[in-house]
Image (tube, one colour):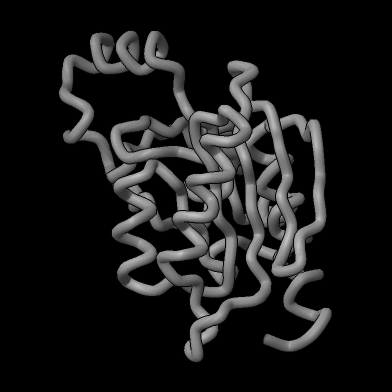
Length: 186
């Protein structure tokens, strides 16, 4: 990794992630290979965001041992879930994270700037379960019949949507004013 450049980039990306997922920071702690940030989500549930800037693997990717260390930190802090942000992950680390309910975000998947400040990027919101049911009832369709958006889309990752969620996308239009469309996260 490139000394201090990568940690600064990852920290900036994590700050955007915290902002757009509407998390509130409660604690920030430096570690020798990164940083731990404890946050509260919209439902006041505690989450741990761990950034890893150094890996013991020759590839520079985060390995299964670092995912297991994250899981131990979650158990120690009595925290339900966590997010691990690093430059890359090994295949076995991805498999271990799925088993333990740890969300993995590669450094390149998050924008290092506020993408919503660009005029061509519309506003994206995750619909609540009640709003989603109301929408589907009104349209008389199943969610899978909505236009789709992949869960790996940077906007989806940034706002924290999961497969099965429905997004409300509000665009500004010169002719229609505000135009609302919906996307089903797959």
